[in-house]
Image (cartoon, rainbow over all chains, first blue to last red):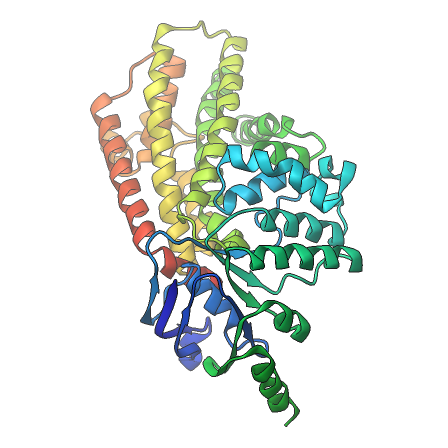
Length: 228
Length: 244
């Protein structure tokens, strides 16, 4: 479905003119993503997980190496609150977000009632987003993101939204999506979520793949390395 | 939708679209006619200022906004791979709607000061079209430059002030003592030509120099095409620049 071959990414830090600092975010990473599988990515903060997703989504190009995607497959980052304009109401924001994730205007309008129902925002859906609490915002964002359709879904640490009840609902919905015909790459810091959802796990450290394979085994090794 | 967001942000809402240019004209009138005593008839001078300043404000505000637009939506750039020209384009398109109401206001002011409507005002259609093309070209180039290096964001306001002084907003290019210099300004600074064209059409009912207008349009179109294709080819490079 999608393959990364010896992908590296470096960039000059903004202070490059003083210390000539070049950051190496990813260092010769290669792996394959198969159809309908759910791949988990784990690792500490700042080891390049998000960058990897961005490369897979085609937002960034690797400095070296290549990304091979099956022709016609679309990959998209599932993100909370895409394009939220605080002055507009929830409805307009939902339409904007859905369209930014590749839906046509008519399709986006079609999702609206589902979004309103799932997010349980009720009348607040018509209020400007700037009046929302953080939890309400993430409800709106998650729902909008979830209801759009792509071939490869790239999920970056978003299942920690809303109150306990909504989180449970969100996880259920996510599981349903994953168990169907959907290829997913899933970044998370929650061991239980990764074990529950993923077929295979990549452990990344300092821009390299440390281990990959069975979720339980890989997570155990990752935890063990943290304790050292 | 962006217009809706823009007008709901302030208490006076969309009234600001009109108030801002009007306030500018009043400030310039106060300084140049009442304090510095330019010796012109005040009615004419207000019209003269309004034609120039309304057009200039459209240019300067839109180009600076468009230039910062990609960098300002950093969050979005990191999440979706969209054509980078979309952000400045949406800013400039939004401004076109806003400006159309400002032009209506300008017509209203002209009528109020006793200028009779003329058929020659139809010349405004090509003038505004070329003006828009020019804004698009400058806005796109500005957006690219700011992406590549944020330092350009510091220079753009300075450039706008420079243009304000050199484009003949509060002085008339045609009244310069040295006619050669006037020609030089009109040729080297397309904005000065455009502002002069606004006045020629609206105040004197004169057709603008069409050849000159066409040349500006062609140049602007060429720059626009070049910048858009550059943005398409280097979309991911620009994204990296914005994110780091």
